[in-house]
Image 1 (cartoon, rainbow, N blue to C red):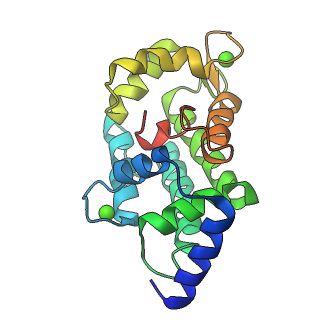
Image 2 (image 1 turned 90 degrees about the horizontal axis):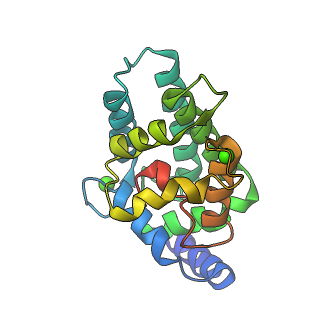
Length: 190
Ligand SMILES: [Ca+2]
Ligand SMILES: [Ca+2]
């Protein structure tokens, strides 16, 4: 981390406050190889988990859309790493503190659409309880509290979770700093 970036980091933390516990958990979940940095390879592992779980070839339209969505999101994170190819926990937290500035949140929305396109296209980017359980399985989320997730995300109670409901949870998690919102779900965090 350069001196300029360190100074900018201190200023941003002063403005935004320290990262909340769930952002740190999110970092630890994405940093699959546990080297203390989030790199593109960590996101590629997550993408591969989707492709393997849903039996998708890399040249499948939905697989390419997912790859593109995560790549755009990664570009936003990289931007906060001062040109580096890997993001430490501070830069990761800053990127998510700044999510309400727009572009990172647009990238998150792209991931939500791409994941819903993979999980179910028959209900117009919405998934029911069965498909949701499959998504949790693919992401390796098995904690007992996961059974409550569907009801928490289905805020209008129509028995399906749509893009807007996923996006609301992400907004609450990343923007409002609500550590109990299930906004890190699509990255494998309960
Ligand atoms: Ca890593
Ligand atoms: Ca719903």
